[in-house]
Image (cartoon, rainbow, N blue to C red; front, top):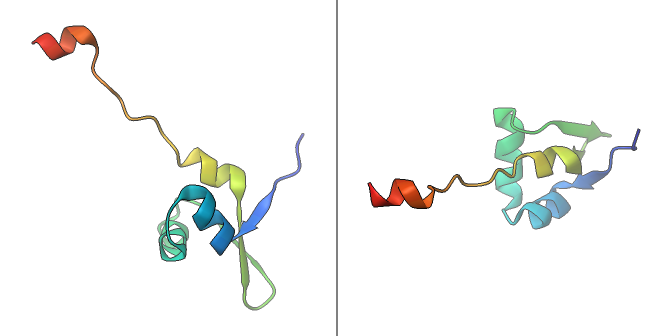
Length: 66
């Protein structure tokens, strides 16, 4: 079992290529879990962040001809 790796909001935003405001929105919407460390510090699990990535489905060559 691997130990979860946590990142700050700024680092998480950089990894995902979004703003820290977007990371906060993802937490508020329940798309990722935010973990409070002390009264002000928030961390997110990097593997949860990577799970947000989903491939965009593309049509096959046959479906484009139709």
